[in-house]
View 1 (cartoon, rainbow, N blue to C red):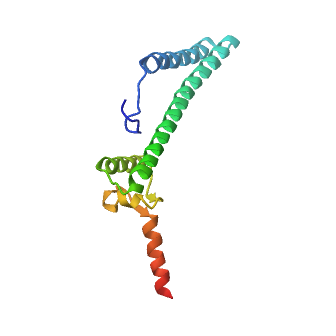
View 2: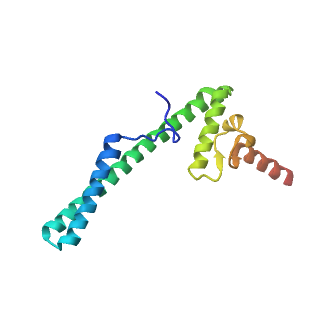
Length: 155
């Protein structure tokens, strides 16, 4: 099975997307049409409210599924990053596939709206350099070292 990420997790479920959704939306529209053209009745109101509830349920079901899927993808990415740091970088290994994975993750972050990336683990500077990034990178190890030098030169 291919690893999940935000680029490949879109899935169409034909019975839901091409049958259930259109039928529920048509039912909602038809209920409103009947109530407008036949006049207000309690049965008409119940039909419109029921159709509205079903449409709301349909959209919530889809959103909840997407949220769960997004959380699973984020968890998988955290596990991959954890493995990358502790199984490779802490042992002095920088593999090409790891560099490619880090670049893909940075692109996904940019696509999700990130404006910068903070390398908050000292080993990540071994893997990612500024020229690899699609958005600004701030390496905390480098920033701390520069500040330590600046402070030591003041005295």
